[in-house]
Length: 400
Image 1: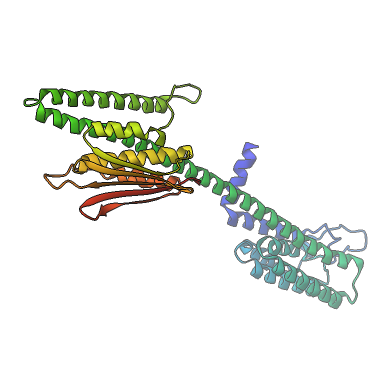
Image 2: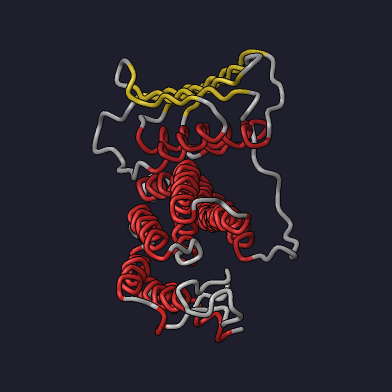
């Protein structure tokens, strides 16, 4: 089986050599033709002689015609119509020259099979009907009548075309199946890459949201402690306490995230519920203790959100308050508007005017936009009137 497969691959890679060998076989088969009581040119036809003709009974024109017809088969894959036309002309010439309709039958079978295997169905039908008509007229002109044997030859050439059509259909089906398989494989690879990218971005957003808020608190309170260490040690001590608390919180959350990343599918790791708007009080309190004076307003009738939308709402408020703490003047207005179809979040804070603003990476805004897109919401973030910065997010209750 392995040797046959290797041989088949070699034949597939060398189609010209295969067709050249086929031309030789067809030439030999046309000379020694035992299929249709050939050999009318032989001296023993009809007198108990051999049922095939030999080179000795062939004349030069017959051999030349067979050479031309068989030689044309070398180009049957690239020029099927031309090969069929040459084959039909050779068949007509052989019938006229020899008077034997069986003389070109092998050549006719191959040319019509080639037409069926390499051209469209309409072309195949037209070529088959043309061949049958020309064959019938040529035989009638050569013998003066049509016998059952001659009609059988015409039917046989039509069957060869039908076989070619069947082979072409089978090849098309195999090619289509292989194309679908390749497309499915490419789609699987693209889907796997997309999922890896989405997961990498999700992890990056979670790490940023977990770390950024608490590190901002640490940074601000460390600066406060350093500034008040000599003049107001009690307040400096309180600021250092906030630094320690924020550090402990971020270490715990980082440990949870990294534990999830390291855990296999079958391992169980205790995890806390994902934060949502129900934890907004704790978030506002921790941010206020870090030094941000927050004015909070809540309107509408609070109703539960889907888990993904609830997490997105919490993270957007967290990131917005963190940015206000880092870049603002120490105050922020938070609005949570519970509407029947959506929750609207708005954080507005004046930008710092004294000194250099704390530099940022811009990943926070990118993360917020990605979260909003994941739940089908809308986010507007940018400078507002009076030197303020406004973040406004609208999160639908029915997430996609």
